[in-house]
Image (cartoon, rainbow, N blue to C red; front, side, top):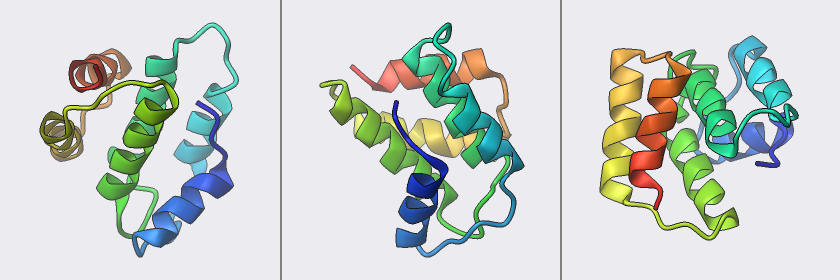
Length: 111
């Protein structure tokens, strides 16, 4: 997935948030260049940074949802939107930080 920190900030700004802390976002963005990782794993790192570390003052879940929908569109995939929302809320509420778990949850709702 080709996304920059500026893209994430712009997306989140559209949902009324602003950046509070960027260290986990920087790590998640840097990992996007790792060719050894699959696309879903890279997406999982982004979601963990957004949903668990809450880098934005508002709109973290909406930003994560937008990113997943954009990812699916770029890869010509369909999304079970209800399941996606359930997964995003679950990851955020339970503070799930296991990348493999997040990746599996993403795969369950992106077809």
